[in-house]
Length: 148
Image (cartoon, rainbow, N blue to C red; front, side, top):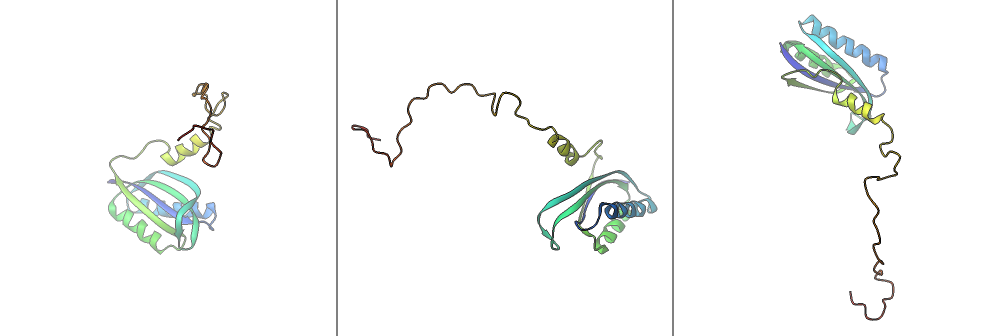
């Protein structure tokens, strides 16, 4: 069987429980046609780059699928008929990714807090030393003899 990464976007005004019900429905379709879903990740509500069917946000869900192409075609057909699904994308991959996806790893990285540390905004920069006087602005009067 082929390996796929499948992401679908659900309307923002449906509840997370309804999104979970959609995911369960799609998993059932895949299982009934001889495939299996190896990983499911709900990424939450995220802003879209542009409006899709008058929606500015959507629920994102990732499914890692090991199934025959006919099973995936039926899931995509059902998603096309569903009013709650805005978009979907399926990619065939050579191997499924183990562990959390890059999207979930990004969320964990964001929880690290302030990265600046105790040294102030840029502890890697040393003292700038004496830089000398700044040159005057164009609207300031110049001293005698200055030509620049």
